[in-house]
Length: 162
Image (tube, rainbow, N blue to C red; front, side):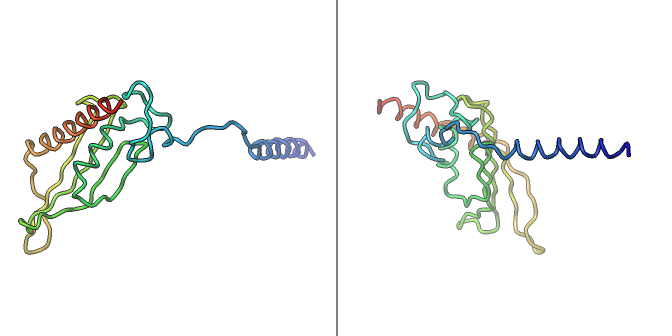
């Protein structure tokens, strides 16, 4: 009989939790992408172009510049909230025995060089299929610089259009 009051109290607590979770909040929040014109940006911006938009923790200029720079490669995974772009393998038609894959991490909401990290992967075709190969570190730096240059171009265009 001692278990019965405990079971009744536990049941009441569980029921209260379930009912509490059914309530809806009536607060109106804008869609996280509403302030920047969608995933790729281009809409109206706040007075500070480096300001973080609610819900997105990455710089929209770096995001768009990364997509522009790697636009020739097929995209495998794109996460605008986490700032991750992963491409699928891409082979240059002029060098069919070699292919590349890229992963871009946007690490900050500010337009800075250290807010960007690029990882490149390279494979060469061998008799048994594709084999991993080393990537020249200078290539990774060139891709990062291309993204940063494109982000600066977007920033200048954005400033000039005001």
